[in-house]
Image: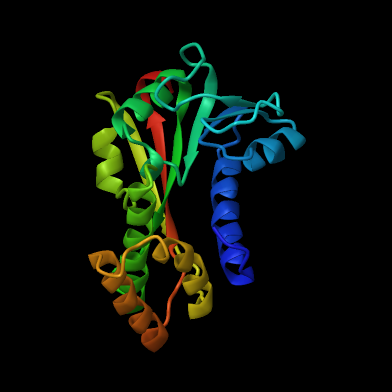
Length: 230
């Protein structure tokens, strides 16, 4: 997201929380969908856990990270004990289709995480509003980058079957310097005509952030156990 030290630290805290939740499940094998550079895959493999990652932007240099779409996983049914999607659902154009594939290749269940904003906090309301603005600019460029997927939306997107669902909301309250948000935003703002409504929206957000502050998002972690395969 950025090289700002505070943002990187908070990103790592959320990553570590997710990884620990996965390790608590004591998985024998894991498929990490939307694995990016394969950081989680490498950490699991280093500890003797069978792990594979898939990502549509995979380079092919790492044999444990395959190039594949979430809606077309190149594996047999029930190939992995657990399938993980960490902060991936809001990047998926077809969330139900992707979750259907994840359920197909899982034996025990899915571990899913999404960014989450605590909207009872006025400063988090500003952060969530900026997050929507930031993602809209990516969608203008042709990327799929949607607002954060809620727990109800995740459950609704699951294929029809029997599940036991557990959820956890986690947030470490941390303030982010306005300059860090402005640095993230400026390249996107430069692409907008000054007459565009999103240009005016950013200026309003910038004023709010400078006046009231900005705090990092938390994470929603959802454990989905497949009843019929437990």
